Image (cartoon, rainbow, N blue to C red; front, side, top):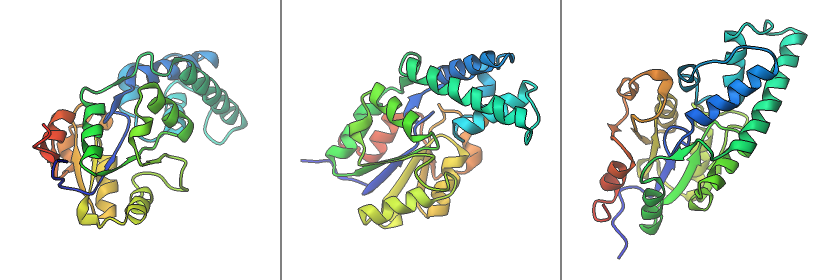
Length: 232
């Protein structure tokens, strides 16, 4: 018999929530910086900026390493070169240094077995999102995948969450967002749904408690136990 469920729809963030991607993203950022003759950034710089999408991360890296001023033709050229190399390196090395957090697949499978609809809502661009999900055998575990370029806006705008509520016919009180950052908390609040945060992600280097989620749970196993105590 399927386990009783506390929510009908659970939405997950990706980077820092289901998959630890920091090392892999850092490699791609630094390879891109080298291609345009700029110094590398450290892993802390990258992890503090994960969550807004690849283009935003690269703009920050370009500014930090003394790239051409924003708004100039040279800045446009440098950013385009960074984006090209970043995409190439990310595609070639996807899954090499990223790792799903323990219990990620088991938690998703248990929720689906209990009849919960699952959605992914990330600010990562679609091509990179789907590539990462496939690399770690997570793609087929979601009923809906919403990326940073699915809508005109991205998190913390709640458009993706609200669209999932409409698609699955779920009331906000029956939906939960699980993430690792203040961005995820703000997104959930704007959509009127509950939010639980995990501390093993990025969140700009700040404790997730500062985002005032409904709950902070230590890992995905604890999430599964809280949602499906009979399955834990």
